[in-house]
Amino acid sequence: MRVMNGQLTATPYFVSGAGDPLVLLHGATMSWHVWEPLFPLLTPHHRILAPTLPGHTGRPATAPVMALDDIVDSVESAMDDESITTANIVGNSLGGLVAMELARRGRARSVVAISPAGGWTSEGGAAAARAVSDGQRLVRMIRPILPIAMRVPWMRQIAFRDIARNGARLASGRAVQSLCATADSTLFEHFDEVAVAKPYVDVDTPVLIVWPTRDRILPLRSHGIGWRTLAPGATWKVIGGVGHVPMLDDPEGVARTILDWTRTGSPELFT
Image (cartoon, rainbow, N blue to C red; front, side):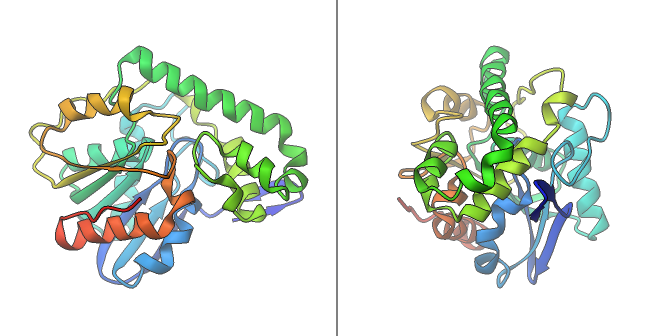
């Protein structure tokens, strides 16, 4: 992903590595590039497929009005294109909900859902969507000054405060790329309702739900409780020191958690 003349250029997916397939799914208004810091740690152990979801930079929406099933369909199509029948699937936020739906369809060997969306009431989901949409509008307003503003650590800290505990640690170029992806997403222009997850009590796929204590988008106290009921057989891991998108704060820790789960089914704690 590159920024040229203020515009973001992106490929629709990433494929690399060897071993059991591992699908990585990003959150709303982001792209597969959010997983890049983990690739050197994961590709020696897994064949990685990291698609950008439809309605995000590098992938147009699949229909004027999309539903959750349309996004799940798109990931299934990407898996089919790569001859992947089943895979270990990791998703963050919206990607976590999509990962759980792929498990429902029998496409997941295991799931790691990081702060998964959907464990809310319709009203709670609408409030979370408004918060993300409001942030996107702000990014679009300040986009012309992003290359200059993101050179300043405290401005990176402010820009990423809702999704990362320490946004200042991001390199300025990566910060600009991430914010441009947010600005370019058309997700909210193509969704007319908030997806509410349905119970996964009949899904026998091993599921690990990971929730950061510093999540400001989907706080554990108000959004985690729904997932306790939706996926009663899931293993839980509550982590500290990271935000809603923990790959930005601690890529090594997130990669270690993924590998612990895909290899042994037993997550190791990190803080």
